[in-house]
Image (cartoon, rainbow, N blue to C red; front, side, top):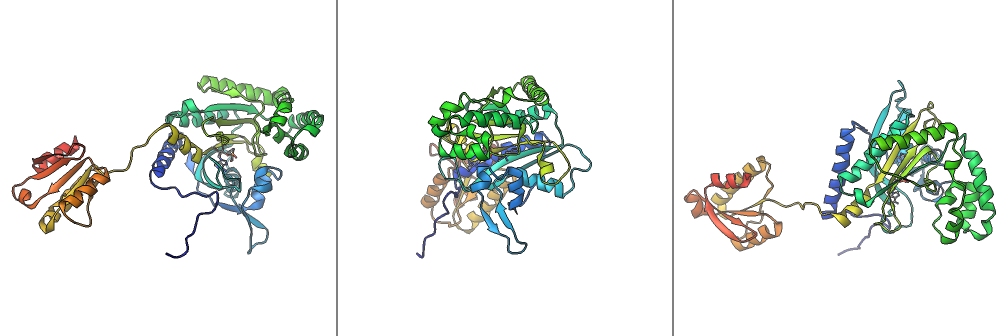
Length: 419
Ligand code: HAM
């Protein structure tokens, strides 16, 4: 063998049964999107870095240190692999003039995102998000409905009891600046006792201090002023209504006043779905309202709200708490010699046209060998097309689980299979 190559750190090969969990997770979310009549968009994984700088915010961890960025040899400037989908979707919404006429647009996108994070359980450098964006409505009913859809996904997967919805409001450009000032004043009093990261965040992005996981910082964070006490009247009314509509939709939630999202475009509603089953990677999804983002990226003022589900984490949860049906044939067709193969292929084709999963051995070795393969395939039945049996107009059907074997006409065999 020549040189062995290994995959790049933080990137995954997803193989075998794991893919069955992926298919289940993706099929289920697509079924929900269909039920809500949300249209799919398929967008580039590469954008001008500026789209993310401006969209997500220059002082976020994502933009400061987590993007895979390269020079754009043709146009100058730099390009980055998308670390999330929202900014790119908004870029496409503006570029394709979808704001005209200003009706509600609803999009979903399922695909890989890239962040140069420290890989660990549930945290990868390439991961898949199931992302949804609603553009064009500022009604709190939109917030409640989109959150309800998100939670229905976890219910549908049987994961409802392992996740919790956390809700917060991060205010708006009218009420947030004075809150930020209060926050800075409060933390400045303790800066000496807090970690280096917090001190840096305090200067550049004070809300992010609330997200620090270090014990010494948590001591101060728990008594910090909260945005919910500082909301302007409009934000407060919006937040009250979101909760009211969530109640009408029977969507349970807890308010977490310390939950601030890692992206800067959010205003008002912010939410996260968390689990305690995946160690430090506790968020399986998150989102919020971003009423200023379309304008920030050069479009007309347009409200928006969305979320992204971390599909890798959903799959990890599914693997912990459920099993999926394996891919295996119902019937394995065993043949010997020309005449037998000719009849066997007819049976195989007929079974497949009936929608039955059936396989045949390509190597065409002896009975023992083929039965071994039939067993390994996980088939429920083997149909043995012996020439002398064919001459008598019958086949042998073996039930693999108990090795019982019975001769029957092909007609009866098809009847058995249909049952
Ligand atoms: P986010 O919270 O950065 O939000 O990511 C959403 C979800 O993606 C997380 O809750 C997590 O499950 C998953 N995720 C993030 N990073 C990783 C990683 N390194 N490995 C595995 N999974 C990961 C956003 O990206 C926003 N664009 C969501 C949004 C859409 N807000 C409005 N619209």
